[in-house]
Length: 420
Image (cartoon, rainbow, N blue to C red):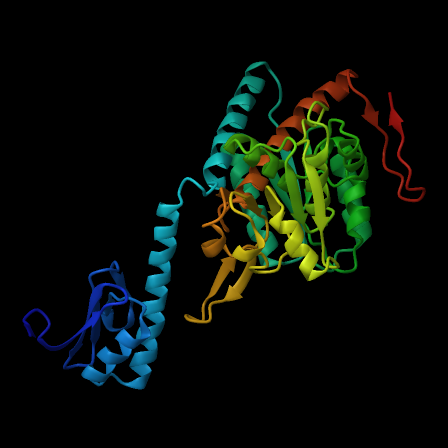
């Protein structure tokens, strides 16, 4: 075939792919450009020589076309990578469409929550109150931490919360960080204080987190806040577990009397998640009333499978890519995937984000499942905004003396007084 616009002449090779019920056509031009076509897959354009690629992923199909067109080994490898990448995207899109009712859209729910917070803040301001303010302390030059902080500040702006970032270099001493926190504690115009983790290795994260005044601890990591919500009392709670509970509620996933399994026992996610799931639903935290099992790195592999198979609700926060596979869960399980890892795609060689759950296969058995990314992450940020607004409200009440006030945390004695 002659192409007048480009002056190219095309040689065609057609292969009938019975396995995929599609006909693939690979074309080779006189200048070496290769075009692949399939009736089944959607178009994908790639930049090298402005080639367009359509294909099924059947390797035998590709090889037949390659042999007919005498495609070079180097060109074969390029085409294979692009075919698989195209098919994978198409597969993910078809899964999302097929199982749309199962996928919990964390972005959508987080957007709804932030809109609600924005409305509440507008009403708060209309009553003559000062707007909420969030101070974020970032120590070091961790790129991921910088991105997380940027996302949090963006959300703060969208919800009507003023914010600031205090950036210090990695070599900053622990004492200097503690002094900054003390100044923020004493500043009546600061409602929420967040220290972005992880901190440099020479700092004690627990000591730094405990230096934040509990009523300004919007991350919910201070021992007073941890102790209060473990006792089913009102407190500023860790954002990720709080966000997961909100996902469950808004999706209509029942927790009362259900078997819940939490994989991971971190102090920031696993432990508080288990507490919120099992605590009394009529208490101040309005928890889940579930029967909870916690699994961790020392749980024998066979027992892990036994526990996950009995779960009605499975929360996975281990940081191990694709730890949970389809054979480890029962039909109808609700899965919350907290993990997020960056791995190298064996086909394309590019990095991609994946969760702790083998999403593509597990989704076929799950009643509900969160994607990665786009599931739990946005909810964590939304709950941070909620905590900041709550901290602003409670600080006003602190100043009027209507609720208990906390004394300064004593790092030496590791005791805290709770003044009524």
